Length: 348
Image (cartoon, rainbow, N blue to C red; front, side, top):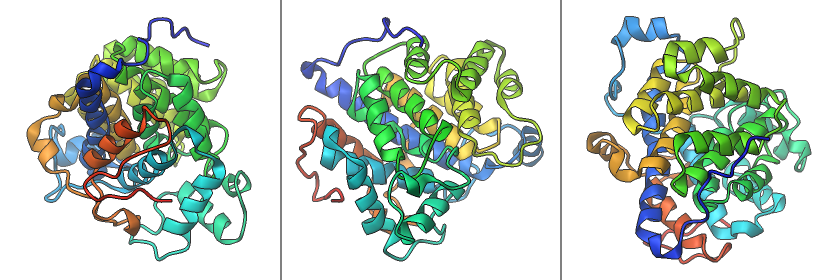
């Protein structure tokens, strides 16, 4: 495992304002990256250039988050309620109550891993059997992993432990490892770690010989050469699915490393590499937002992020990522307790 000796300790309680700014930066950064990357999802860089030139901002008339943001909200609210006491039973119950046992939105459960999970849950299968489907390796856990790093600020191992519990319902193998890498990276960034230490934290929680670790190391090693080099080092040529966790996570960390943690350049690098661009930009945005804080997000980009529409998860309609960030920072000191903010109530 990689060394995490250079990661700062848990943030001091007196730094509540700084912690809140990083938490808000992480989740708002996730939503901004998601909205920026959504139009470029499943595209090649050449296709992006042919249509828009280089993407430097929103290209949609009404930018909004996708399933990435709504599932991140779902996990954030669940984590805010249960904290470090979170169990697979809690996660499974929430999936039933808020997704599987009610009408879905137009996205019909979102990606392949979510669809497979919902079908298994509706057949009466429980975790971890519910995660035994063809896309258990997807980046569906990585896209919702940032809240665990926000909650466990300065504790990458705890963030990785908790996100694996969340993922046990929907993912397995490399799908779990991708989520753990993201959660640990955000946890390190929340404590003020440098981008190099953030990458080290991500590598420290996954096996050295895993596909996730190998891809992440390759992407970061060439990051100084720019996005084309990162993409060439990571993307599996000819493979039809773009939501492969080891690939998406490595592209996101590569973009973040190439930009040295700068928010704007992290997300735009991820977006312009294409592939699963909404997820890679969401993860890069979460890492950079936690590193630089909410003030690093361009105001025009931040202003476009409204409460979730519930397009994928109707139960998330009306929830805002900034409120979720505040709930997580309020919950973190006690580990499993929270006070509802602005009348919002996390799911049971």
